[in-house]
Length: 317
Image (cartoon, rainbow, N blue to C red):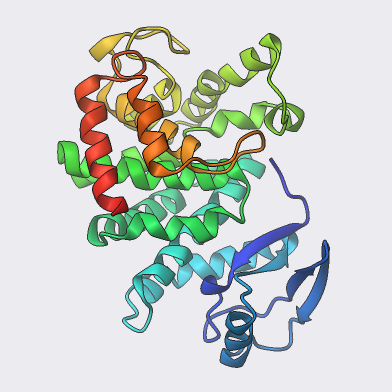
């Protein structure tokens, strides 16, 4: 799950006017080559050169990420309100910033307790997803170049915010709590070894049992911090419950599963199907819909599933 030294950064996140004085690297034949040192600014000419050569990502050393994350988060309001930036670029900046936060949270547990940082990113996601009909399209460039678990968490957050707002019209405060729980829904994966997470073959029964523990362990860890609402914690704990009662960790059945957890399960499966994973390539939207309908009445409430499919399909057109 961890990348100990290098982090991919979308070119769209590198604004010549605001980018901090840190080195940038390019990847060539598996090697990381210095493109600019800390003393030289990244210029508009640099951006044009990257675009001409079809380069979408550059790389920074992980030790520079704290400064880079501070730069992105501090300037997010201004960047997202900049009329000179198109919607797709704003989306890439926002998703990149959210992924950077998640990397910090997963690698340094004290960052997970930085609730205000998470809430602020969720608020930005709320406004972007609600206000842009094509917001979901902006995932693809960013998620393709980041480790699955982080990209998946950001995608689940955006989907869940959209679904809760459109299907249930929840109030803004609850929507923020939904976003926080979604962003950290897989936090318990920090207790699973990389060997299991990155295994390309089928998991053994013991390995699958360890994976299934992530919901309860993530819930207990975040609950013990005393920073998170019941709505957020419910999503973390119950997003793998099934409508037929055969889910985990508690085997809740039917509408005994909280509404937020039922929607989170839908978002979780859709994202898992439509993103590349170690052991399986992503499937197209229509194939994901077909596979989810096979779980109608089993994993999911049939009516809620159809509402979700209609919503996501409209946003994909």
